[in-house]
Length: 503
Image 1: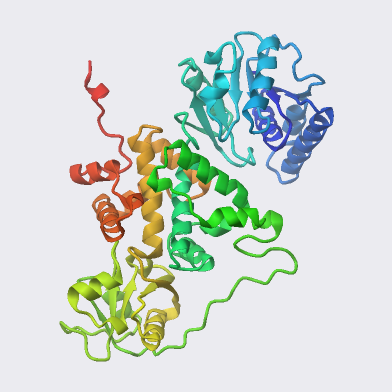
Image 2: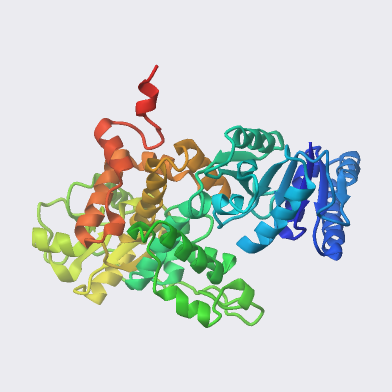
């Protein structure tokens, strides 16, 4: 295939490298001739690096470079061009101007694709004389390494274009997911679950950014915590994406932005690129904050409220003194495994001693980091002792403020809920949601499969408990989770639709 790419910046040159390496002839153009030269040199250097690392043969490298054709004029006639990919800056006017000129220069049979990450594909297509020829083809940076592409048909896109683009992407070694033309498409939309809930936890003073990141990494298994991720992406970018998706979905509470971000953006606290975000960066920045040493009495007896045998057994294995009586003794610490509820709820409901009752997140029990919830009524000495008991056998313990569900549960519930809301709107297929999130965001598993691992009924219980405890509509149960829990279906199942029942 002969492909023309217009826009020789980071995305354009990445797409050019990907397509040329896969055997396609690639024309690369830009209004700045020097940008094209720099892009060709960059692609050549990246391919030569692949040869040095034995990831490509010298012959394949030379052939790929030979297939990369710099254009002096991006609007030059191209009778043999089958696909054009626009990769210019995220501005509707700029994209409309570029595509309009290409429409005059290229045959009517040429398929048009825009690499927009945030603009409506339908709006971009509407600027063309023939809006049916354009679809979104959203790559992620760096293109050769991020092996996922969102194929986004606009409202007027011809039905055969999306399958053709999907086949092209997959033949070049990447995975393709078909996504509805909605704010954030799929990956950016799904990613709001983690970041917006992390900001909400910080708003409520549940934990510090560092502690929320530690829980996200060590309990949920994420490679990077949400605040680390915001610093890497840039808070200006993250804040703009959060706002645009929330506004695009007409102020959906699940996607509600935080009041914390605008002032930080105004102050230039954007993350790595400015040297200061949620963390400090650079040669003079202090190292990672160390966690406070464990100083309490690890031999103090504990009483596990409820019937959570997993916590009771785990503590017993570590040598803790676990009481087996029906009521805690006068000196015992009371540990409550909370699931979508608060320690304060348990204290009030069961008459537990407020000063020495603490919550333990069940998600954290089997990990190296345990999460201990502390209420305003807690005795500080008792809290130190409870931390020491949980830290036995070289566990790390994070203290957080008592909140419904604790940190890990709220993050997980939000990730699953946002993904489930995408599925129930039919914005993407369940399998595509999980595939895109694992490849695009690096989660250890797809959000719907993650919910299945916890258990559909248990996820519904978590959503209901969070909603009941907080009254916040952001936590309301999704129809997707509710139906599947009631019907005994996994979250990853598309299920039967009415159209499936027609002859």
